[in-house]
Image 1 (cartoon, rainbow over the protein chains, first blue to last red):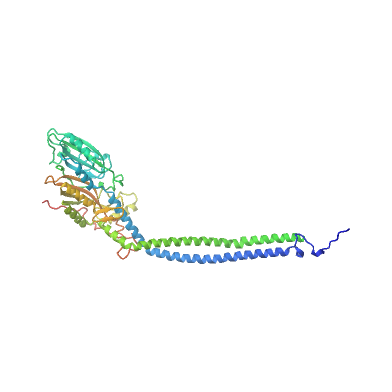
Image 2 (cartoon, each protein chain N blue to C red; image 1 turned 135 degrees about the horizontal axis):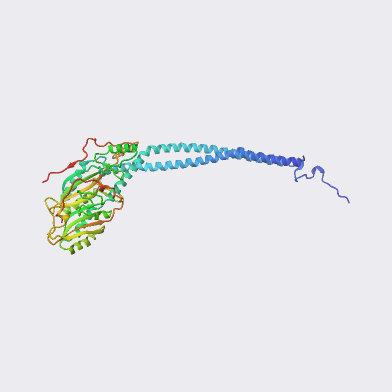
Length: 248
Length: 256
């Protein structure tokens, strides 16, 4: 039996399946239109976004301009506040970096034994400091003071015995902030007069057979001390002079 | 060319057209939109920064009266000129309270602490201009503050002198929270204690001290007034004493 195609020729499938009589062109057309529509949609939306952002940028820039103008108007207040803060810090820095002379002298008065008399005291914050015409070697005429860059007292005085000098040194170490006590000399004068540093005052002098001493008491270095001390203030020239002798 | 071939060509043309439209029309617009987005972000950041600045400045404006008061009070510690009369008054007052005799005050010309010579002529002229605005005897110190070195002489017993030095130091008391000012800020660089001419227990104390001034370019309040700051802060200079003033001043009470 011979097979017969019952489907008419114009209703049969062409290439690609359901192209129909247009051969699939209609799908291509529809697809093209859809893609074109999507492109236009994206284009329009992007354009809208651009417009929005342009407006937003303009508004923001206007606000920035206004804010900057306001900040400019207030700038002197900021500058003055900064000045006040800086000046406060400067004063605080200087004030807090000073050596506490009062505490050191009070400490000294508490530890010096009754049988010991001080004939001169020269205190300096840095070795290069000068006071009363005397620098680092002002009290004793030596350079022990210059060995340590820290505040120090240079003491000259008399004691009843060498033991008392040793006792004085031990007690001086009890002063708050003292880091070292260096004895330079302790000697009895055969003539009953003290050493050169004491007799330089003209009015002083130790009792016969009483040793005179010269020593240096070093304190804790100041926190902000530079090479020349806290603010290099000790290097200023001092024109006056002071005599020594007779200080208990 | 068969229908199938024509269809393939059409599809390829459509794809090319779509890609071209995307690349030539849509993508530039998208780039522009992205660029504008970045501009919006930048402007927003700029606005935020300006607003923060304004907030901070408003706080400074609110605190202006307090800052002005603080600066004015610090003027007692750091005057704009040598203000020797007030220094003498403060020293005499402290000496009286401590029970010591204020003998002398010597202003030491700051020759050794003058600014180091510079090789640049312009810098040199600037230094000279700065120095010219300072009181005679003053020099700019390492901290940038003009300094005035003095030597004081006092007489009294040891304990009163020690108390007196405490009073000098307490002219300015600094804590972490505040700075209390009741007199001139000074650093005592050295002291020398020796017997007074009248003999023990009277002691002569020679004190080497340095006082400080505010920078000449700022003046006491940098041109500010109680009602508000100057518009161009730090733009003015405070003129110093006339150049004909003596370089060193000495007062010495007569010996009793």
